[in-house]
Length: 217
Image 1 (cartoon, rainbow, N blue to C red):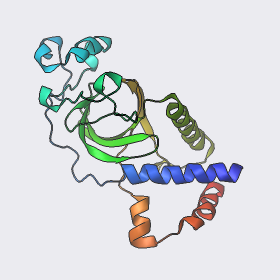
Image 2: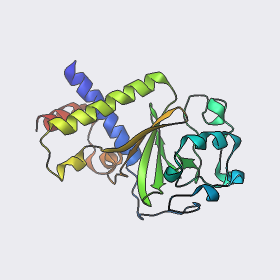
Image 3: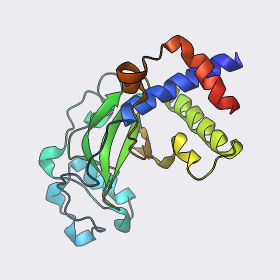
Image 4: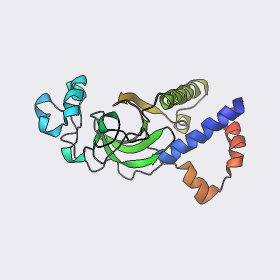
């Protein structure tokens, strides 16, 4: 049972790397942000915000608002969660819309069982990142929390050097936005799934022995 759980976690992290693994050639992307600096209250115009956002933004400290996008980039026509979710509880993303009044959505990297993953620009630092947006469903939020706990234990228990920590997915920030748990991570270069198909041709039957080797090492 223990090996079976490890196998499932290992396969799941392959899927994570598949979705996170698009190569980002530039450290900055096209942006419609008003400013890469903290926006003051005077610069936040009501005409740029939806009626939902006008109430939502009151929950954020004024010095924590870095980006809010233009009205034409906002999408609120979904059937659930005030228009922000689709019928399967996935958060509906749109290019150049914002996440958490900080992240500028660049494109979608993929969908998974737990949610979808986007490539974004952190407007606080003007740096690329990946954001995993968990489905608006308590079951998937619980499973994702287990994934986070596993990654933390992995980092704390393994004797990893400074360079070795790059081998484990590091979560830079975690927050709840519009009833969705969001995990911000580095935008990874490696796409293990595509490399398997293109170069290694590693059959999935060998993944069990592969992950056992790395866990023991």
